[in-house]
Length: 85
Image 1 (cartoon, rainbow, N blue to C red):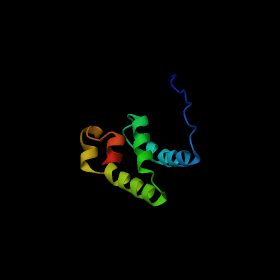
Image 2 (cartoon, helix red, strand yellow):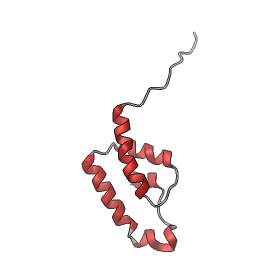
Image 3 (cartoon, rainbow, N blue to C red):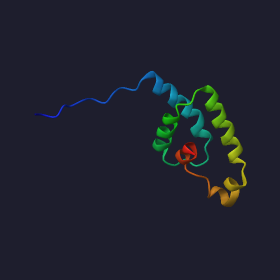
Image 4 (tube, rainbow, N blue to C red):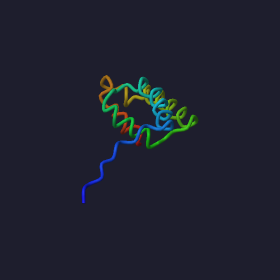
């Protein structure tokens, strides 16, 4: 028996829409590390408009927090870690 060869699925419009929301998040996040992992974390959340707004609002608050400002941002988590939390 020969293994079946399949081609990877093409991205659906839903995934493209989810990643458009990620395009709003990514430029605002101060630590640009592991973008692919952050995209996957974002896709798992699959945030609607309301959740995207809550995420962006929380991000603005976090950017002003003492933890993130300390030692020039040394303690800012990677974006995927922050999204999963």
